[in-house]
Length: 290
Ligand code: FES
Ligand SMILES: [Fe+2]
Image (cartoon, rainbow, N blue to C red):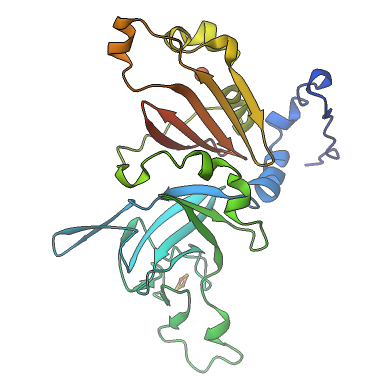
């Protein structure tokens, strides 16, 4: 397929900006470029520290416990997040260095990871230590064939991974968010449930629509009653945007139904991690990947 050169007709002044050309939403070649230049170079939310990792002797384990792991997909790349014996959280490619078999499936508690195809074995810090029946192979050096590492950092209970080893730290992406969220009691936060929605659209269509409050008066009459729409505000920062609207002064019956709300407040960390506060709690949502 021949792809025309990428030309982004973006005007710095929003008043003069136009919607991107349609091919940015439909051309599979552009999606591939986005995967390599955007999704694989930015911090992606992959789970929380309460991510379930099976049971040991009847006790439930999570990724906060030593010698645990879970798997995930980021921009079509399979990854493994592990907690090693010393308590360090790490992320690796879940593609075996031998013939690309899956090194781990699902989640669990293990002190080594054994590839599901021919049984090459890796330690949780990524070293290759077992290669069954591989002997006398000239130039084969196990020490150069460990699992491929990615960056892995956390903010509160949220685990982020970045494929780009030279990327700026997660803190640079989050900017003022940790400071603004200091009042929230993350310690008491419990993982409630995971819901996956498959939306048949390009990822930017989803994010574009999620980012605008323009549809609230018509599409969300319940929310419209709740917020002071005239004061709805979108602030943009280097790596995230923040949308905020105060809750309307409430009458007594409203007060009974919304006892703990003080603002409609959401943040989108580029390109696809959403953090939304509802009823005094935070919800972290991973957006669409394609
Ligand atoms: S592909 Fe992993 S051991 Fe062969
Ligand atoms: Fe909406």
